[in-house]
Image (cartoon, rainbow, N blue to C red; front, side):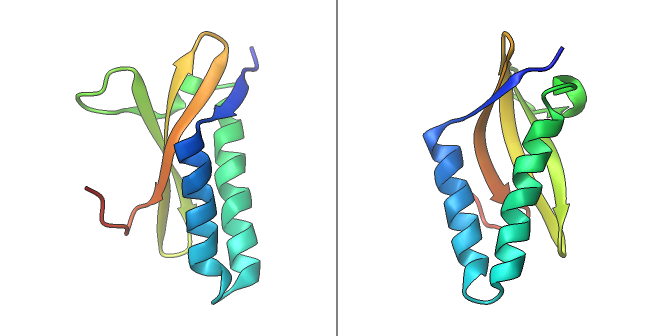
Length: 96
């Protein structure tokens, strides 16, 4: 059963931030990165359990989206028939 994908405001801000980081150096790569992230989220519509569970945060899962020399990490949760994208970051980013 296909599900709808909803992006929370923080996840949208993450997408914008990640794209802007690459934009000045390589506009084409910036566009490809945003497309890859969105496509990754869409893969969850038919297989939401494909992401790995997040330790200590039971309702959340993560998928890795390969891009360049690393991966984007997309954190989400399933809410009935909806995939809720919570945050997105690059695996090489420092996170608090």
